[in-house]
Image (cartoon, rainbow, N blue to C red; front, side, top):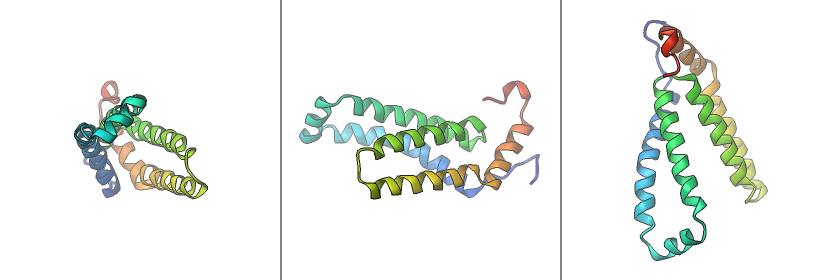
Length: 135
């Protein structure tokens, strides 16, 4: 791999842009959907879901931008956050859904931590100024 101009794997490009677009469009659709009376009633009963939805959007946006820029912290943040959120949500469903959640987590781990992705994150961090590596 060329250390001067590291190439981002397509899987990371797709994941990064999907996170950014989902984080931007998700709240817009949430606000529009919350104008419908059945959803308004549900949201009045459980406000925490709205807060978690916006937290998901913030974490997804930060992680998406970080992944596109080759930041190691971004892939770790998103993997840990997505794993915890998925496992917490899976406790509400049947065993077959839990199996799907586990396969999704394994797929995400494969995309974020396979050799080409790790090479990309390593080469990008190696080309940055040590003081500014976090950003």
